[in-house]
Image 1: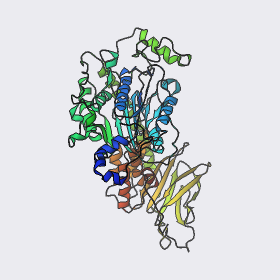
Image 2 (image 1 turned 135 degrees about the vertical axis):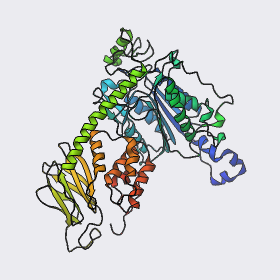
Image 3 (image 1 turned 120 degrees about the vertical axis):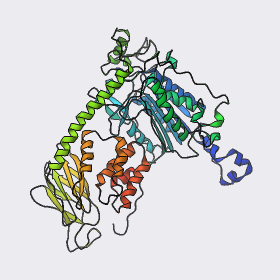
Length: 579
């Protein structure tokens, strides 16, 4: 299989019709033969002060070996000899994508964090010194400007919640925006762990046999070691994204359970047939490679994050990684190296067992939930006690809580008129004698208008003025903490208040997106912010199809589609005669 398209031309329609060409350009084989596929496999096992993960390095090697065998132009980054840095990842991606690529497979194994809302971070070798992590969502969005048709992203990393020790770790997209117009690729997203949970590594009898649970099964499946990973509906096709997802969703929890761990992968497969084949059947040996037996659960202890302060750290063996090389370069001698070496030599108390690690995670999540519940409760109380109008005869208006507005700008069709000392503002026609598409006989407002509000302290806030809705801004010294639309026909919005309170507390989870969308179904006058937040959560998971469905619910109810949803879904738009 060729890995580059240099000098290769695509067949003409006439050639495709000829009998001789038909054998060569079978539609299910043509893509695999001519598609330029590239792979970057990253394995960061040594990220002090966190536990050393030899399985992450082994996983990157396994994926890299498989990708090369499949004809991918492949780069491998591990921290066996030098720390993996942001510039290494950027250089590798830019080199791989410089010649154009139909498919990019981006694999990462190592430690990770999650903000719990819509952000996962990959931690590189010197994350603790630099206090930065690779933003998975920002990197994915940047890649949309590199001319990629397909993006396969594999993340075998913990999604442990950020805490006091990691609250200052910032997000980095690694690469600059690409040179092409933005293009929405088809993508398959493979996350080893569910949100807020850890991924797990199983130490082997020797370092080379150590493996992360998810990556270990993924690599075994890709090379053909598991018949269950083959497409059952079309066995001659090989291993497809759908069949691989079914296998991993079934096998990963079972293997993790053998070691007393809980691991449920989160997988989204959006690459469509026939271009969704990962391993063609003809590339698997007839004997099917035998997988290395997994270690006896009674003889090993699974590895997770380790203790935040680095005490009792599982460190790499001498010469096994960048922190334990006998002759490290001066630039890599820092407090992390010292910590790793010290942790390897110093006597320590027995390490906590898996049950204690999982219990510790549960305690951390419970504490975070308790703190968030307090913030949510306080926010709900504030929302329900703030004074706000329930109706405007002009059909639209807004109010502010926590700040004072000096004016509102809506463009030529309307003006914002102060409606008293309580911070209420009515939206009305700029010229009552002038009739335009936004007004029917002066009142009420018929179509949305962009709204900018200047505050007394010089700041500006923005939203949209919507027909039949009263908009409420809740502000503090940072800016707008909540934007809630309440229908004039149903001026109470406890569901929206709950969601906004959760957003303020950082307690809005990606898995809540379907629940937010369900509130749109059948509701004639629902707060559009619910749809906007749902769309952002879906987009963070790469689920563009549900962003489109969210837009559809608004159109079905005759409501305007919020701009954020149109933008996130890359919807086409045209200007009609009424503006």
